[in-house]
Length: 186
Image 1 (cartoon, one colour):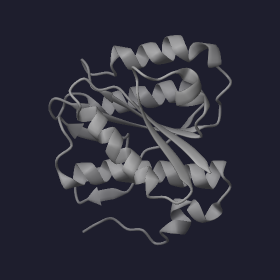
Image 2 (cartoon, helix red, strand yellow):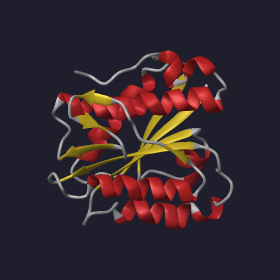
Image 3 (cartoon, helix red, strand yellow):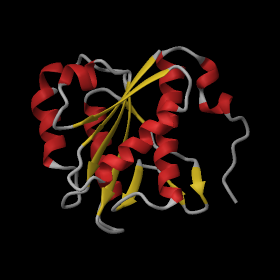
């Protein structure tokens, strides 16, 4: 059984709402144990060491991830360097406005994961005509619009598929096997 953690920081509650949507998407894939963990309650052992895959979410603060998320990786995870190589990860972020830096925040979150040896990904899938999550799922404030909610769910679903395929060794979970002939929505 794949173990997924959705780790998030949120002051306004918007990124937490995204985290719950990501978890909903991951839970839609059979054989996944999914936990949602806030950064203030997270410990290295329960949040990262025990998972096979992680979806990491942060509000966009001054164009980058929150200081609480960065501190977690700098301080709590530093002793675990080289011990978690090969896990799978992805990112999501909310911001106050379009152009606020959410995609840059997702790239920064993915960079942290890559530095710890995570295999990271984005989505080529379009969940609507104009919405995708190439660098991670993004939202402006609260995720209200259905395409934004769908992007969060799709990110979680894809994380669960990759964990199933690569960690659990279940080839039938690979996205190309689960959805042969996928195409862009009209």
